[in-house]
Length: 309
Image (cartoon, rainbow, N blue to C red):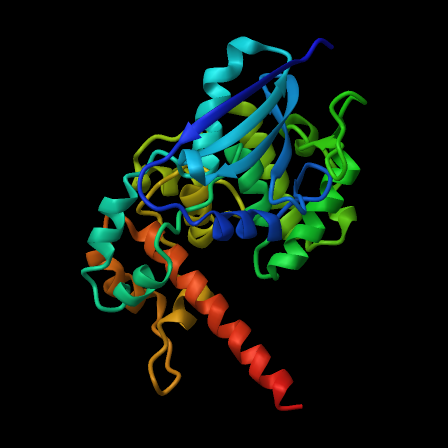
């Protein structure tokens, strides 16, 4: 295979919280296909219409850009690869407008002020993100990453020697491969294994299943028609995989926990939707800030508990 190596800078407007988006992707990295290196670079394998390559992304704040090094056999694919990188790292959003809107709401204003430039991490491929979302149902981020890594090790395609780098030696399994795979053998409930196969079959039958459409209601309805995918999973897929800026998984425990009152009472999903109504059309960005707030509080509680021992 003859590879072409291309380095491009992808610019961004407004503030950019690279440490947060890198930490998000790094903590959820699927072993074998992606890694956040010690030097802060995000590296992963990529597959596009049957051709395989890798990309490496570094933060270049002095240029107000991300610097991407792409190794891929088909130079003609670079415009699409560039667009996908922009979706992963949320480069095309007018973040100043988003933050200005959300900062008018009392619950979000201090969170926006604390973390300017916080963006919604996307995904290279909506199908891959959807599989990851199903694997992560009702388990921790660490457990989901471990399970996804086992799936890739069992069913993924190996990279060629010239593409392999430390920590990246596989490509995510194709829909056709997972549609017939014995994923239950990885150690998951049968219902979740069936959901993975249903999802893979749907993706194999409709290559445009995870194409962004700017139609949140239709997207959620379409995803929920796949056996094993409910509203939380559908909104999470829409949010990260399809770049639906108003997606909002209202039943998420982290979001409810982030908005608990002084007595410890948390809003119900219905109450949370009512609270979030004024945040439209940027509820996904509100969710990212609420998750970051919840994670920070959990870290502080853990630190306090350790100090008390």
